[in-house]
Length: 630
Image 1 (cartoon, helix red, strand yellow):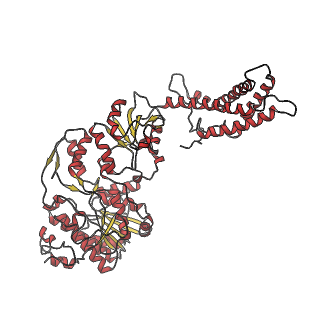
Image 2 (cartoon, rainbow, N blue to C red; image 1 turned 120 degrees about the vertical axis):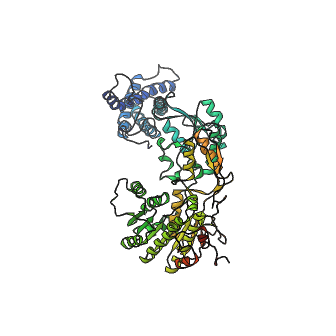
């Protein structure tokens, strides 16, 4: 908060309304209006005390030689000068927060000017009313007295503002840096705050014993359980928003094991704010997404804006988790038109609401269609003629597709072909196909179908000499039907948490980061490439399950069900013969994809002409490298 603020917003101890019988708004208003007069009276009193005292000190406490009439004249001159100069500088016009450093600075300047005035008054042409040293000595003493009054009032006010120890929850704050200091200050600034900070922790040895806004650093993160018991706290606020998911997990796991509730601030990179913008409303409980996520990667905004701003953009699968986030982020870059296509009307409605904030189902930007309907997709592309297409529509649940491979073929393969064909016909300039890490060395229906889509996209790029690319990444946090959603539901229902294998791992990324990098990939990808996003370190699923159970405070058991058909123990991001080559962005790898035309696909896949297609049919056309396996 700026020290210089309006009288309306400013609070001070005398003008603050107290909740007590007989106190009214009019009484409060009268005190607010009277406060500058009282403030001036206090400063005047400081001169009334300072000038006689310093005069006595100058005469070694002997009152006889003192010209008391002259002292009175100097005191009156000081009072008049203090009022006039202080008013001129805004000191008594409620321009400054009471007892702030800004106000004390102006107070010092005002009193220095007063000292000059009384020096002139006290030393006329003939004689002297007080010794020459008195104005300087009185200045020092008066300034100290006035500052003591201010800071004493400020301490009383802050004490009255503190949250009630009976109504507010005591918390330990981890992080004695800028964010921690700000949060402590805000939490102590109002009796209505839900939390009362009682101690500080920080792992920086240089901050050991440091006092921040009245709280002393009592130890490191490892001392949290002991400090919490000492101060009767049951929660710890992590006030270090720049912590990575890995560091946050290492810090909070012992806290959770000790039965402490962990609260956090949003990461600076997750929101458009600086540390000064945090408020107490941003405090929230720790989630598993916080532990699995990582700081969002930098993206080249100018490169993205160059191919999105002012262009006609179409997103398929716009009602899904990835498609909806694509729409939200693309909308921020100012496309001329943003067409959102999906067969799920409820999903489209939800996406549109998240962007516009109001229902508008009649908008031409909402396109209800199934990508499996070739004629419908062709007509829509001819009508809307997009410049850029993000193809996110797909079936993505591996176990379900394993039992229904023909549905994966119709939606993922045929649907992608329909969209690619329609895009090429109307001259779409850029095409981004959303792929999956399961397309890397695939072992099941989902992986096979997504690998075929990568190859079809590569062929379209070759045939039309345009930057049509695929983007490959793993699981995104918070998607519908995700593992985290299933685990949370099982815990809430009191059921055992089911994990397929104690050693199974998966890659995870926040949907926001995956989409930001996908849009970036659209700017840097060359035709026929798959751009592989850096997913970080694979996460042990059993650890995720245990942490969710730990956060729930229950004793939910974990049951191992065994790997399902087409499921890998460990996913990979690169297939055979693909290398990790990152020429443009530190988190995006480029790999060539062998093209596969739809004509060749028909001939290579013997099941295509039949009613049902088999897993083996798709596996036959998902090879890597320059030639199919012999």
